[in-house]
Length: 359
Image 1: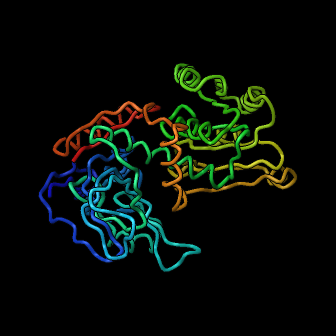
Image 2 (image 1 turned 90 degrees about the vertical axis):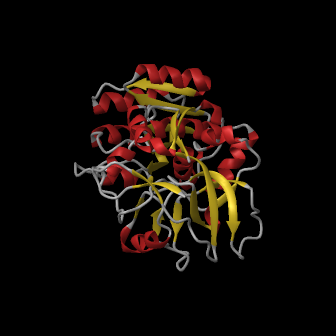
């Protein structure tokens, strides 16, 4: 099969013919129809993000495809089914604290690297081998619709955060980082889950206005000034009442003071979800006052990705019409132009934009 291979950090992807994956028990082979290209994939490939990847590797986290072959432990999947491939691979020998690897992207710790040795290659290829439990049926779609369904991979990240915080219908949410790709996805997911109001702080007034245009009066934009105290009060004023949940998805380049201003808008007994990158690039970490956390009974949830059942539940939200994939503008490349796709994704990583490769 044809695949894009990362052989060394800082070098372009090599488009090569490689052996097809071999099916084993507990595995499914997928014909990849479309796969998203992360906006920061160029930083993974050049080594800037220092992701744990044992090279050479076929990159690509998850994707949309059709079942080609199933193992003997699959009882629901059939050859030809349209599916979403969840890249979050978990070890099967520790249900309490499994090791995790993101197939085709990175791994967490020594256990995750061991997982990566087997569930190694990702979706920048004609086929991929995926753990059976990571293959989620999406129902009938057309090949043309597959690119838009790649948005599931983006939407699942904030969905996992809101599940961890037990977001309830009717609550008020603040999304820190709302003008970014994952942050705008968090706005749409929170509203689909029944949030009464989503406060959206940011500096880009054009994007803030677009969020209101897309989702209506439940979105309350706030233009940030850079003054921590003033911004915190402005965010509180924008909400119609106490803020029940703060979701942070700010990238590593953002100052911790911007994140802290948002986090500390949450009400007493409120919940905070941290899914962003503060401190990951070697800068200062997030400092929160111990007395404020303790006396206000604040729950802080650090969340990486989402639980195993999240994809099926999110697919149900899409099928019900509560979550609209049509919000996403997709640009597709064939596998021969995978390097062009990576460059395009880096230059077009804004809200509701999706770069995909169609192997």
